[in-house]
Length: 313
Ligand SMILES: Nc1ncnc2c1ncn2[C@@H]1O[C@H](COP(=O)(O)OP(=O)(O)O)[C@@H](O)[C@H]1O
Ligand SMILES: [Mg+2]
Image (cartoon, rainbow, N blue to C red; front, side, top):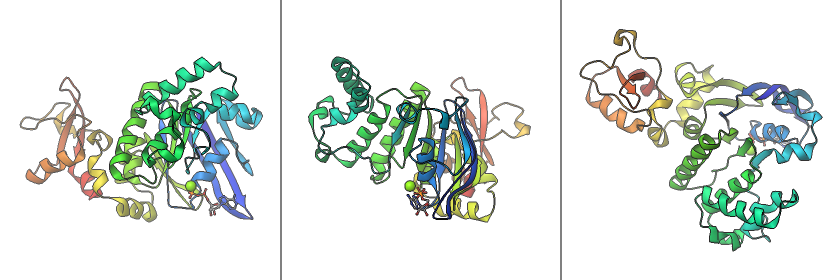
C-alpha cells in the first residue's frame, strides 16, 4: 500500500535520510527504530510532505504523493507528532475536532465524532471541555492519537507517541494502539527507540542508523539473523524487562520437523498471547528445547525455541 523507493534527504550537505526503501502492506504496522538522529522523524515528515525529499519516490496506494495536493494528502494521513502538539488555548474537544471543522463537517457530526474518539481512546468524554494543561501526560498522548484519527484516515504515522510515559501507561497505550490497529485495519508507521515496543507493535521492523536502514524484518529475523554487528549490539543493548511481556507468538517460528505437525506428548501448548515471562519459567524448569504454540483448538501453530529466547536475555 505504501512504497518508499530510494528516498534521500540532506540538510546542509549532510544526509539525514540516505537512500532508504521499504514497503508497508495495507493493514500492517512497520516500526521504525533507531537511536536519536538516525533519520526517523525526517522520514515521516517526507511521507506527509512536510518536507520534500531531494530524491526518491513515495507511492501511496499506487499514487505518487508528489502529484497529490499536499493538504489533501495530509488529511488522509493521521500524524501523531513527537511533541504531541496540542493547541494550548483550545479545549480538548476542539483540538480533536479541528480537522473535521476545517473540512466543514456540521457541528453535530463533529461533536459525535469527538465523543466517539474519546471513548475509543478510553478517555472520559467529559475531558472534552478541559484544556491540554489540565491533562496528565498519558491522557495528552491519547488525545494526540484521537486527533490523528479524527478524519478516519486509513494510514497513520506515529512519532514516538508513547515516548515520555511511565512503563505502565506506556503498556496501556500500546495495547490501545494494537486494538485500534486491528479493529480498523489501519496501516501504520510507528517510530520508537524502544525494541520491546517495536517487537510488540510491529509486524515488521526497520532499524535505522545514520539515515540508512540496516535491517528490515520480523522480530524473529532480528533475533536469529541480525544483519551485522551494529544490529546485533543494538538488539543486545535493548534486551530487558519489557521484552518479557512480549507475547510468545511474536517470537515463535516453524516447529521442529520431528514433531510432525503435532504437539508432542508430555508438552502442553501455549497460546500465542502468553507472555514470554511465563514461557521462560517453563524453560528454566525443564530441558525442552522448544515449546509448542497452539491455536484455540489446540492445533500446533509454531514453536518457541529455547535458543531464540536465549538471544534476548
Ligand atoms: N530541519 C533540519 N535542519 C537541519 N538538520 C536537520 C533538520 N531536521 C533534522 N535534521 C538532522 O537530520 C538528522 C536526522 O534527524 P531526525 O530525522 O530528527 O532523527 P530522529 O527522528 O531519528 O531522531 C539529524 O542529524 C538532525 O540533526
Ligand atoms: Mg525523531
